[in-house]
Amino acid sequence: MPVSDVSAFVGDYPFRCIDSSSPAWLLSQMDRMGIDEAWVGHLPSAWYGDPSPGNAALESKLKGFENRLKLVPTIHPGLPNWEEDLNRAIGLGAAAARVYPVQQGIDPNGGEMRVLVAAAGSVGLPLLFTVRFEDSRQRNPADAAPELAPAAIRSLIRTDKEARFLVTHAGKEFVEEVHFGLTPGEAARLLWDFSWIWGPPENQLQKLLNTVGVDRFTLGTGMPLRIPDQVFAKIDLLNLTDEECDMLLGGNLARWRPGPPAA
Image (tube, rainbow, N blue to C red):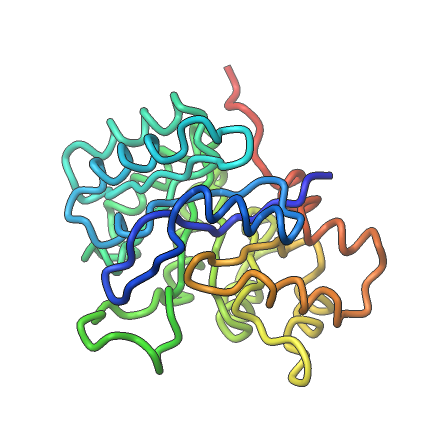
């Protein structure tokens, strides 16, 4: 089973200098950590008024690395051309599509988001949501967008029975507030990365694996904004079977990925 990282980026960050933001650097870290593939987004596109140029830049950066770096373009459902970006993502075989309602200035529970959720669900394309990029204590004062609220995810996943969400950079309280407010069927269409969930001594990750379920989590590093070693250290410190480790490192993702839409 390939080891998969669902939360990696290339490109510059608007609020501080990042020297290590190229595909070559990302691949070097993947080799160091034993990661076979990464779902890669274009970091600055979260703040672009129109992410289309950022998606083009992402395609260019990943050209030649498609076997390991999987395209995850950004969709802005508040723009008139968002369907073109969605159709291009589908045509290119994107692993998922990223959407950033709070950075894009749209209502996370509004009609624009609901239309996007339905459109992505109808073609079997997962939507990837990012709760935060940095700890609030280190954020630049110019980074004024609020964190994504649990209520937005809980509400949106209910709007379409085909929708699948991958939520990255969520903490324990966020996961619990969403998960325990959903039916089992709704919760099964959500997958969480555990990069922001504390390991020992708080053992928040172990508690979530026991209560929410090992099958609901997958690996995400947050590179280059975060050090990839920390997620692997959490796994090493857990009392897991080999099968459970495989689930977290890629097995859950492989089973969760939607198949092609019905003809």
